[in-house]
Amino acid sequence: MIKRIRYQRKTLLVMGEGDCEEAFLRHLRNIYCSDNEGVSVTIRNAQGGSPISIVTQVIRFTRLNNYDKKIVLLDTDLAWPAELKKTAKDHGILMLGSKPCLEGLLLSMLKMPASTSSKDCKRTLQSHTNADMTEWRHYESCFSREVVEKARVFLVELDKLLTHFEGR
Image 1 (spheres, rainbow, N blue to C red):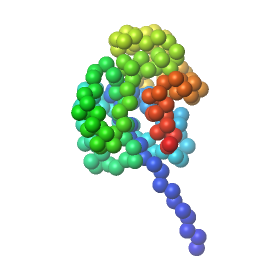
Image 2: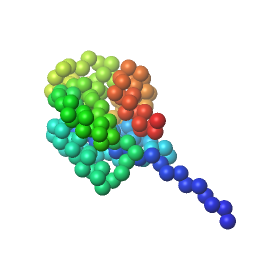
Image 3: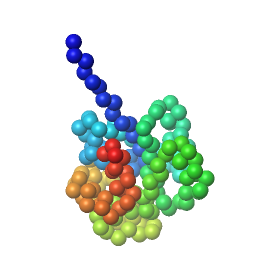
Image 4: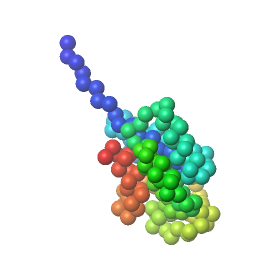
């Protein structure tokens, strides 16, 4: 009888701040992890809140579930206190920021200027894409793998996120 070797996939928890982040992360998972090999990515939606409440949610969630890596994707329009950064680091949570919000990151990916105002970024992205950014399938037309790969060269936070999706 021949024994088959079973390889355990790396696990990654990524928590987004809201519905748009969840949809974007699902789109990235579909691009980078759809072959059922490599990394097993769990996406969670924090349903809004402050950076402190979102990191706290990840800590609570991972008390019951163990992951090799834990990431939170947060807007940078609210300050991240030093104590929060320390708490996240102590719990093995990587904090990645979208400047000033996810829509700002998405505009940057499209090489469009992003305002410092989250509201302006949301309005500009909506007028450019005419898509429901809370639905992951709507990302496919504007944010193909080619667009994402080109953007990761000049967007450090995006590259860090994708590196974890790829299991590196």
